[in-house]
Length: 73
Image 1: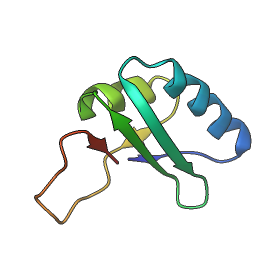
Image 2: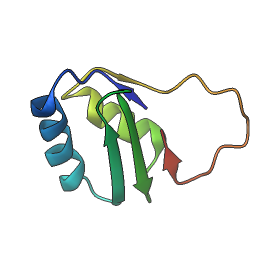
Image 3: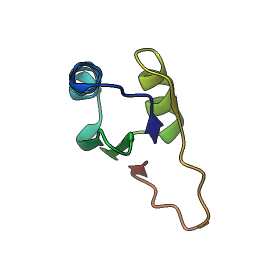
């Protein structure tokens, strides 16, 4: 997912939020590219909605149609 992150503080808030989410097994936050990858037994839309409560977020425009079920970017 692309999430509007401007600083370490934003990333910190998001980390705290994601670590409390049920079903999330791991995640990575790349501040430079504003890319957030979430892994676990979660629905992409659910993750997006949840993140949207704390930061503006959207799915990366995807060219490939072979989505991995448990990977949300």
